[in-house]
Length: 215
Image (tube, rainbow, N blue to C red; front, top):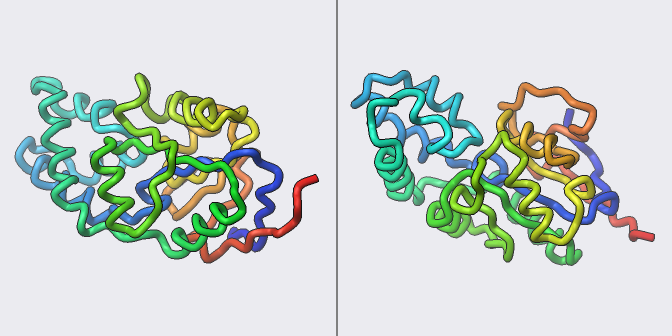
């Protein structure tokens, strides 16, 4: 159900996933992964499903245990980098980020992409790069482990339980919930139901921000 009004004053920090949440990178990911899957006789749809919200390094080895995982990850990340120009912003994301910045709210990004690709995609999509950008390079354990959201909350200087996370994938939602965040699910891919999922939206044009002032 779409959310008509979102009062952010309940939260001290906002944490966004990137792919599928702020940017539409479906084309880039599919086109980057497809040749690799064909070369290694791996089912493309299975890789895309398992990889939604996860770092390459956390699942690729399951498909090709006989290969050098780090080398394969580097090849896939480079293939994604070559397709950064195909990325676009999720509808309403730019305006939503502009509004929360104007309200001087603390916000950050926790993505499973590497830093180079994260910056390239945000830049191509015309979205701001936050001061706190946690990527695949910054955590020992990726989503669905809570570490990415716990680290962002720590950098923001607030408790994770006081943060609202925006996520699109099962992996990402599990990560945010495990960290103690409330969650807004963006897009159509998340299959999880939980009391701390406070809303489900198709895009940011579904949201009207309450202008109530915090006490």
